[in-house]
Length: 133
Image (tube, rainbow, N blue to C red; front, side):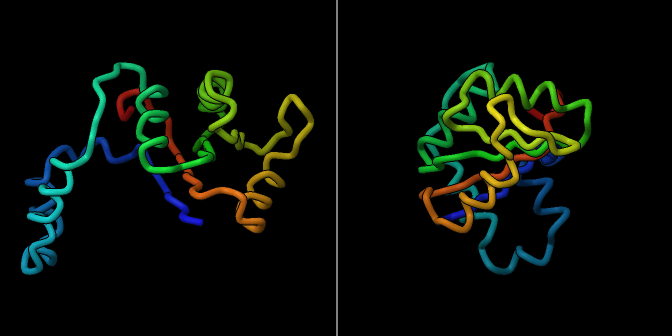
């Protein structure tokens, strides 16, 4: 099973030019040229709703489940909103950890997903800052 770790805290990195300046070690390997080519090949969607955009890209990437990990207690409500909108895709993991409304322990769901290899892909998403989505 492929596991993707996705973090929305990359809002400051807006262009490949900024990446080139920050990570000069990769310039010798054609890394940025390959990245530009790949970015052009990725099918995208013009949606204002970050949840719908995440669902679209997850389906294209064959991601079966996304674990939502809030960085703070304040983000728990956002996690609940995402989970309520698409419960078949998202696994909410609250901060601090709590049981879901159907009395399933979320930590157990994550461990089962990893140990039993029941999904083609699992994505772990952190940080739900509005300005970064």
